[in-house]
Length: 284
View (cartoon, rainbow, N blue to C red):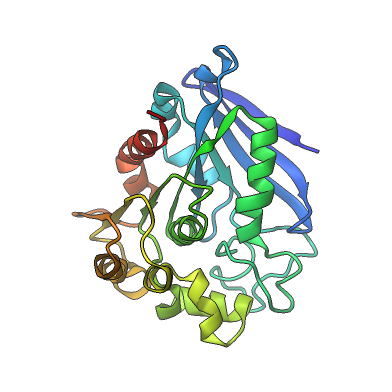
């Protein structure tokens, strides 16, 4: 059952926050949905873009900081922004108190290890449970869905897109973790959620997905700030660009001079990403 937490009017559309009891994550999950004004015109079904946020974020960060609703309202795009992890008193967190594991750090994978596996089923939650809930309660066109995200959410967008091309027709990312198997954030999370055998990490790593399974049907857009403090140690977008070139995956990697990892960077270029998805989602 869907609970409406809040709604507000913005750019002639409706920004809502909702909650439900997740069977997959075994807890209450929240997500945000922006519905543009075109939805009220003759009961139209509209293209939808799923946004996956980064470490420490909730469903609120994107809808309050990115400013995506303005152009989404003009283009007629529904935007969905889920939380980044399961939450609640019974949901395990990083025992060392870190921000890069546990609450706010689901990494969009299906955990297989104790104690994470009971709740941390974020890959299936995004692609199955949340998707079904959105399609049942909002006027989306299920054949016109895109996915994008930032940092950890960029990792999620790339991996879920590459593994589920039957579900998503477009993909983009801001400063994504493209090779979690090779960086500290990813190695900590994948070891905890998936176990110590690194072979099991390959399907949660965008670079490995490209090299193991080949290119997708559609081009991918990535924006990355040159002054991002995580660029060299955690993000390494050149690894994805190299793998894409090797397998023939069309990818546009734009290095944005002077921009950092913050939502200031996202807000500056979010319109480009909204147009990118609109271009690929609108049926000819």
